Amino acid sequence: MRRFVMLLLLPSALLLDAGQIDPTCAAQPQEPAVRYARAQIILRRAPTAASDSVVTLQRGAEVTLIGCHEGWCWVRQSMLSGFVPDTMLALTPATDAPAANPADAQGRNCCRVCTTGKACGNGCIARNRTCRQPPGCACNG
Image (cartoon, rainbow, N blue to C red; front, side, top):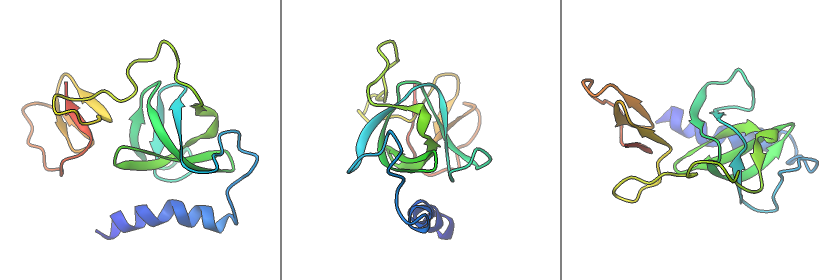
């Protein structure tokens, strides 16, 4: 529980420590706005390339932009939030991009579609393994 609370507080604390969100960021919205991944990118826990990954976003993935600072943007997709480089976000989806947020049979938005394994939390595991994660945004494909 403490880790979850820290993850929720970390992005806002980073933005507040900086004084304000960087007004020079090209992707900076006045309020939360939709953006699209220019390529496959890693959503990170903190605004550094060395930070742990949250999930890999596919090219064309739709995200909600919360704010940007010093080359990194804080975004949200489904139940996940994290940081991506500001240069990896576009205002419009690529015309040849796959479906931004594939949906499963129940109509949920999927952050990851598991085709060779099975969904487990926000990721995929082998079908013969037991999932010990709470339900997440991964779907069976």
